[in-house]
Image (cartoon, rainbow, N blue to C red; front, side, top):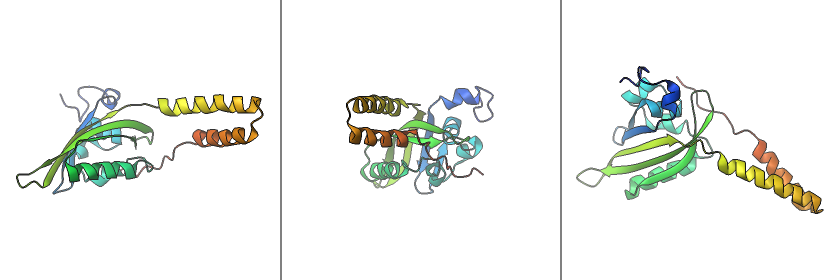
Length: 173
């Protein structure tokens, strides 16, 4: 079974699979499988050989980067497990919602040495869709009740929700 060359499974198959990684903190090298490469829009051969963590961070949606970085940092410092939902850009620049779980491991002296985890696609756009539906319903109620200030505020929210997310991923080399 050669997942890198695609002998087993198509990229579509792999894109639904969770990706597994190990980060060697001393060398700042993340070793990951093909599924993670596909999720993050990276080259599978490079992820298997190892890439610096910044290559993965560059693929995270800009609005999610600060919270992801803090959560990882906290996990490395405390040793507590990491669990976070965020968005990444795949190779085509499409946004993919993911959930990540990880943990930092320490050497015999108690120093952080390796970080391992799993990331899987959630494709969960339900909260945004539900928010849009609720705001639309509330707008209709506000308009029919003559609550113009509320209707104006809801129209502003709906305009913001309609804006596309910035698809400004880092170039892939």
